[in-house]
Image (cartoon, rainbow, N blue to C red):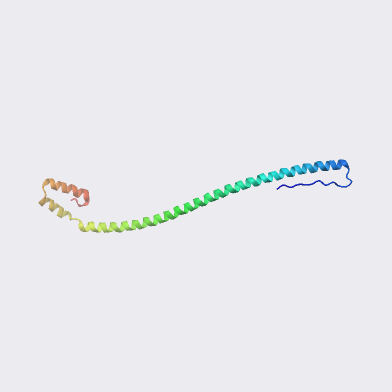
Length: 138
């Protein structure tokens, strides 16, 4: 963005004034060159900063996409977790119902021990009963 000034001689100017005007002109031309150089330097820095900001904006967009993906995954995970809990509760209810139907009444266990087991077998059966379900032990 180079600008230039051209000196034009004016008719009938006194030589001292002309000399002063030439010096002012040269100083202005020098200052204008400095300003142009500074503008070019600042333009270059602005371009670099713009590139830098563009890179950061791109990285920010990537992170926002990742956060969105994680949030979507968390929502999906929570939904799947709730569904599995519901299924687990349903299965536990079925297991509880099957266990209730298949439990040997406490009196029957005692009778079985008394009539069909040796003392050693009876103690093993009692141990098994305690481990399996302490509430059945009388």
